[in-house]
Amino acid sequence: MPRESAKKILIYGVTGSGKTTFAAKLSERTGIAWHSVDDLTWLPGWIQVPDEEQEEKIKAICEGPSWILDTAYAKWHQIPLSRAELIVALDYPRWLSFRRLLVRCIKRLFDGKTVCNGNRESLRNVLSKNSLLLWHIRSWPRKRERVEGWCRSGLPVKRFRHPRDAERWLQSLMRD
Image (cartoon, rainbow, N blue to C red; front, side, top):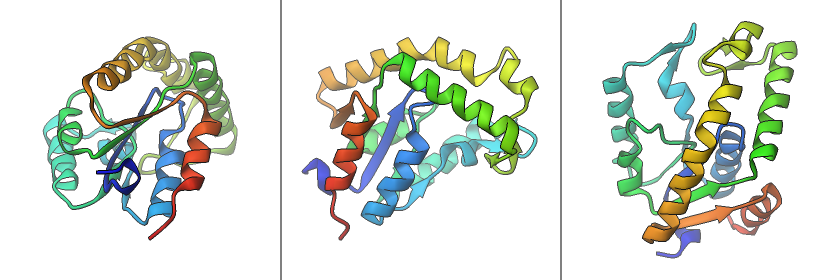
């Protein structure tokens, strides 16, 4: 199946790479329903949905005829991987994705924009041991290694090393 006609698409990348924004644009461009994984896995008050419930939600989506997921958590990433017709890897340089994440966190501190079922960023969250900034630093090598492994294994990966290349590809897609 040509990558451009894929109907089951996983967007993958490190925190701050722009997966959610890219998934929303891809959904708009293709007409394929996009599912925000963070909305499926976080309840108000930053309470995490139990793992079994997360897995059931993802299974239900991935059993459908078409979908876009904006990430895959390690606990259940084999579910979408086993069904994806295309993996779009936003494999940007560490400095670029970290800078984007830092700017996003700072903006959200000031504008109060809600994320994940009404949750908000707080200075406490940004500076905590569970900070997205620290998560980025810890997870970047592992996620890069995972993408490289998928590419070597022959999985259907469309790998982008810079946002402008991803944007060009997006613009080249025609909506049916």
